[in-house]
Image (tube, rainbow, N blue to C red; front, side, top):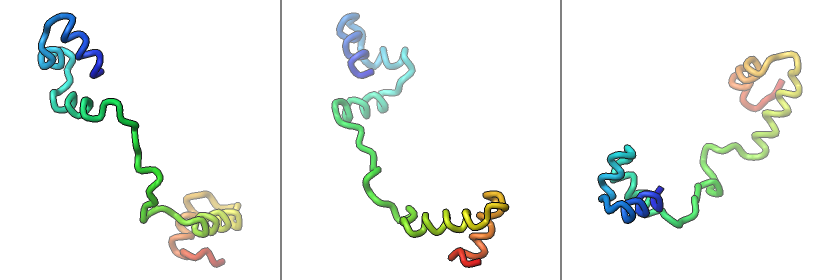
Length: 88
């Protein structure tokens, strides 16, 4: 979008601000895009979060669910909330 606006601004000799107005993009948003232009999209996916489950917790949930095949996932979830360590 940055290249598009800049190129048409030069070709047509129209101010960037006017083009943004016609397109419906705010100048603030366009300037944010210009600051990030050429940079990689870096998400915080590699940073562990406090609320992520550890492997032993995931395995405990799976084991509890396998031990209760006759119950639906909602009931099993409720059962795990009442019995968080999965003992039956």
